Amino acid sequence: MSLSNAILRGVTGAFVLNSGLSKRDLPTEAAQGLQGFAATGVPQVTTMEPDTFGKFVSYSEIGIGAALLTPFVSPRLAGAALGTFSAGLLSMYFRNPSMTEADGVRPSQEGMSLAKDVFMAAIAGALITSK
Image (cartoon, rainbow, N blue to C red; front, side, top):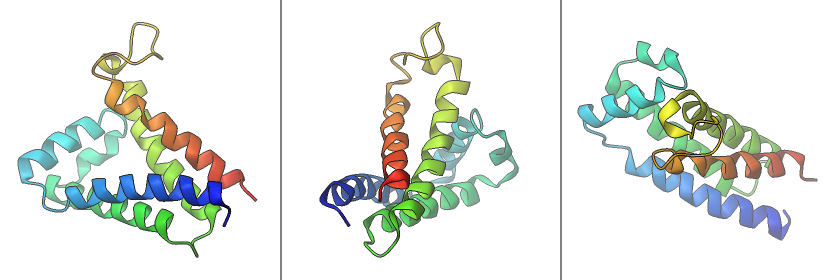
């Protein structure tokens, strides 16, 4: 593994892993809020029970973070997992009009928290295309 690959995976993996660990014991109300927001990008999530959805998000983030931090997981596989995750986050960003300015691309103040996820998509692309 190259140094640049290790840096990309380490920083991003720690961030995603921490996010997943912090969601392990979401109260039902918080899971409902997260699910409602996620439904703006992926409407199918409304078919899940809120507590199940909260656990799904938590475990998914933990798994993706762990894959990024584990050296024997190939960069392409870790990048594909991160790319799928960031695509879901960006779909919420682009499908929610309050997240962007009138042009539909630049982030509004509300959209700044999701706009950063474009960096994870770029990191996923770098991992998938690395040698």
